[in-house]
Amino acid sequence: MGFALSDMTVSSPAFENGGPIPRRHTAYGENISPALRWSGAPEGTRSFALICHDPDAPLVTPAGHHGYVHWVLYNIPGDVTELPEGIDPGKYTTGPNEQGETAYFGPRPPAGHGRHAYYFWLLALRREPDLEPGLDMRSLLRAVEGDLLGMNRLVGTYEQPAEG
Picture (cartoon, one colour):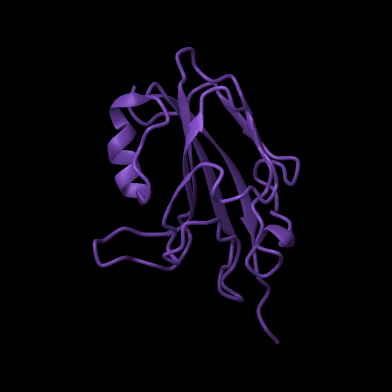
């Protein structure tokens, strides 16, 4: 299939697709992950992976990648259709975010940098939830590429006003 959007839907009771992420879900607030829900997973889905990425972040890594990875969560069983707000980071397998932590790190654009978009990518996989712990976003994507059945995303925005 490759990395292309499918008919699966992803939503959150905390914000609309394309809408602002509440401050409580940002690093400026309580820094807790939003609740997420999904439906329409392709037949044969055995596990899910979730990535939250900010492509608007003014960051280029030494390897030439851009943006900021806020969350890497995987080995979510295929019968799961939602994550609660503030999910325990030990519930499923986590990989490192750009902070080097294996937990959710909420939006934190620099003050006055403008509105950033945060992509919560959900990947439906044909593989069992058996991936090794500690995969970063790029390692996870390489590991699951051949097992991808479908994917879609929920996009939220956040802007930290200029200090003044």
